[in-house]
Image (cartoon, rainbow, N blue to C red; front, side, top):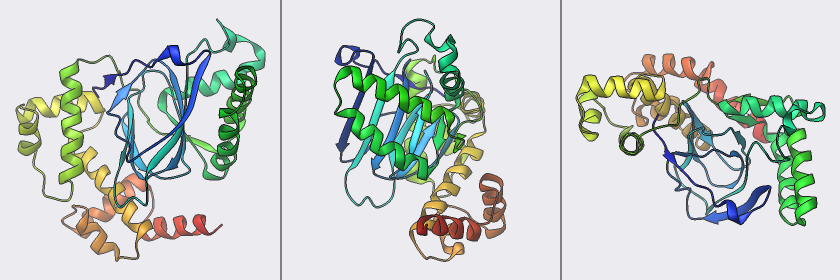
Length: 287
């Protein structure tokens, strides 16, 4: 998938950059950068895109991304307030050349090698890290660095995490391809509830249907309609956990034309039924 290169302002930090921000919505485009990124969501909800994968996100999510891994967060649904996050950026030379080859950092080295796929940490663990990340922001430079290395070690040693993207997406793209993919994202966000044809989406990026199919599959490692159905399933998941509406109504409002097809797609992407998904989420919330 084509993504926009982002040049981080390295002059604003020394060994690494760490900051918290708040704004009306997450509006950074689909992008990549050569630095690692750790993001904790303080507020806001919607769809998170990482590499070839995407899923619903909300307050309390903690995500680790490897260098040049395309990503973006997009608000979706009714927002209770502003969107905010704690973000940390650093490069492979955080503690100098070859620091990850030292025995003391074996666990961190393994963690960072897996970060090329994107990593999400469990909610209970993420809540513990929130306190430590916020505290780190107010420390003097040396103590801040030592605190962050300790946080990395905790991220490395917890078993409560999973990969977000099963494939690695090449980020060395041409700008006009990035623009095409942003157009596709905007189209899907605004039209996923409607009947979508290949001719419609191909026309949006001024390509033939055949050329668009090849382009999208190459960039995203999946066909367009697999991507669209996965997006629709994530939309139904949001409605399942935020409302008490019937599963059939949720499915129809998310663009699915028949219930049998919806149930097959839900099982394909979520490995359980819509009812089980809703019950599991509510049980987790009540703990």
